[in-house]
Image (tube, rainbow, N blue to C red; front, top):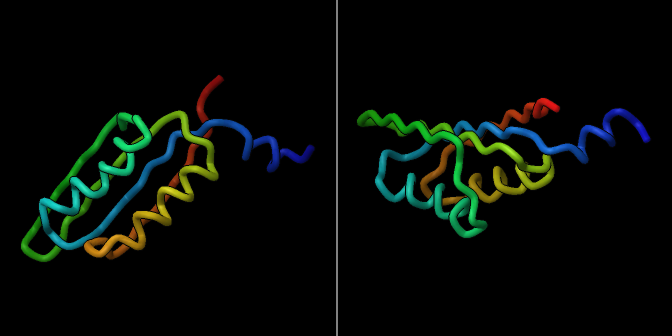
Length: 92
């Protein structure tokens, strides 16, 4: 099995960086997806200005494929403008 295939089977810490419309609904909609899967993010940071809202969500213990699916679901949300995803291997 290739190193890339092995890495895909290992849990990662996913860091989502979301930019969207400044709205209280944006934050609740983003977190709803985690709550539906009974996941509690390690950290959530939200900042808003008059023009945009930035949200950073860190979720450990995800498989890379699941993190990518979550990011895709976020990208189709009405209030979301962009979603970045960084996956880092977990120690051990």
